[in-house]
Image 1: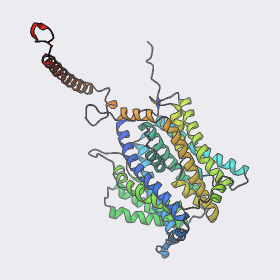
Image 2 (image 1 turned 30 degrees about the vertical axis):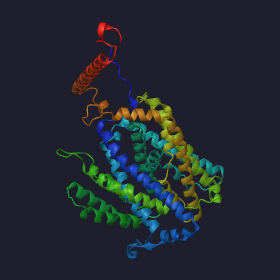
Image 3 (image 1 turned 180 degrees about the horizontal axis):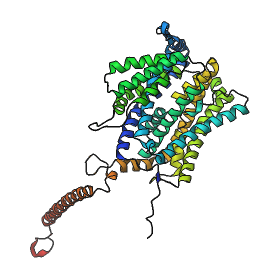
Image 4 (image 1 turned 45 degrees about the vertical axis):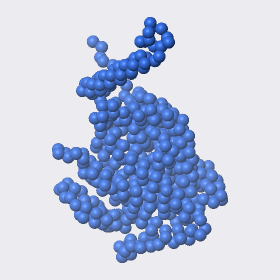
Length: 478
């Protein structure tokens, strides 16, 4: 007896309905946050480059406040980078935990594609930067700057240019960004921690243990967790480890699986509450006080002449695209998978180019990599902005070519003819769905037959009323 032939596994295939619902909800918030991020970045550039306003930007960014006795007398820009971004990484930690226990990353076969693509999408940009730096005899400290993808900014570009993406490609982009954030956190923790106060770090770890125990015991109340989180963050900051690590650690501790009687896990509920704060406030404010760099003709010229800045631009535009596309192709090639229905390799290449938009984490790593060199820090920031803009333009051109096809795919995914709240593509194997559709079509057919009969009757009446028509004497025209 011949064994049944297994159908090839689909890469970037249709998502399960629960996963699709989560992705749609998450990306809706990220898209709104991405537009705010885009507005904040433009506002920062305008504020910092108009001569009459430039001094005000510097004054606000450098304004210090906070309890000095606790080592927290920081500038506004510093609070934005170390404080507000901890909220962003807290959400990233929850996303990662959910992907690991309930999302695509829980299945090793399904996880292989985004993980390999993300790793290649970080390794190749770092390699491109390193080669450029060595060729130009520049500093290699910024090798990690072009390794990050900014999902919010990428979605903002999609929203602005009006391009639709099928849910499978959007989920692939989101999962890439989640894995990207994980390794960015590891890079920050390992390579950008130069001094550690182990006693203070021990206090932060003890705080994290208390946080975990409270979660295990089922203790509820923001008034318990928010003060504790602030203490953990302050201890982590003073330990020398970047304070955003505290955010991701607490995010990873939340339970992201549902128990009996629960519709949503605690992690999902908290993420739903905190994500708007992260996307709508924390990240845009960070952008406002990090993206304000000089964009004069000379500064932009330096971006493409200095090895450090040129390496960042090439890493984002060339390295990200080739790394993600190459990692995806290799994974599909060696696992003998096939692309999802309706997708082709140009679609993967376009999404890979969109992932070259590196903003939030790239700016943060740029500040850490060249800490102490204000001029080079600003030049690297300008390079991040330039590289992200070039990647966005390239992705726009590539996606626009396929946009009509994407729109048809999205319409097919969203079609719900039986109006039961579930897209029809998820009910093709349900006999009840086909019975409902048969009833709907029978009602429509009956309605069309009724309309046809009425139109025919009206036509007969009009013919009878025409002079010389039927009913004239002798049946002849007048």
